[in-house]
Length: 303
Image (cartoon, rainbow, N blue to C red; front, side, top):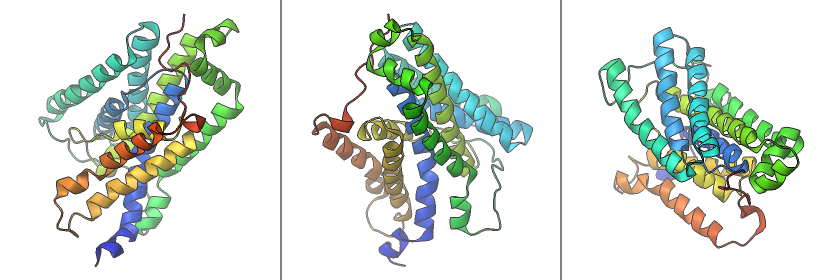
């Protein structure tokens, strides 16, 4: 089979779609957080922590649903901690995000060894056994995680544009002082938005762990940072962010399926998503105004 046949194969398409889920959920978490005015680079750590929480709960109870709930709650907890540190504690958001990423990286390894006697991976879990008798592409298209991610993208886009909560959230991100002057509780809104974004990111971490049927140390592999880049490239909008994540996931899947189809070193292929991220950010930085403008109040503390 030629490299071209591999690229257009069902395996490549299915791999791309599955990889889009953790990227997309993390990007949506970033959109919710940053549209409220809180910079969030802790998406990487949130993916990692929620993946371990999902696997640990699923392994302990034998229930895939319990793992999903645990992963989402863990993500919401990380988001809440970030919000409390930044919004209420007035700690710099970058410092808080870096700290949470480091805690997640080291803490998951510590817990992995404490729980399972290994610092590299957990025991295997069943995960979601949905449509086992179906074809690969059909199982991918009707994957509950994929359907949930699409529904969440649509819900977040609608909420930001059509609801009072969304209007207040965007007001907090654009001008927190003006929002507070008209009675919006900026601190509460930002805390809720970051925690909600953490919960959505937690779903992505759970999907990542369930796709591999185990937790592996460092398994987020930079996906949280690429998702943050997708947020910026998309102009902080849900649907464009999801499409950007689809493009990044396609490059991620491409470097995997081409591993045995080309003589290029695997390290070179593994760089594809990150190179694309840099190129996208450079292109966005050259644009002026328009949809790529960040929320005006991003990073500003409320009084």
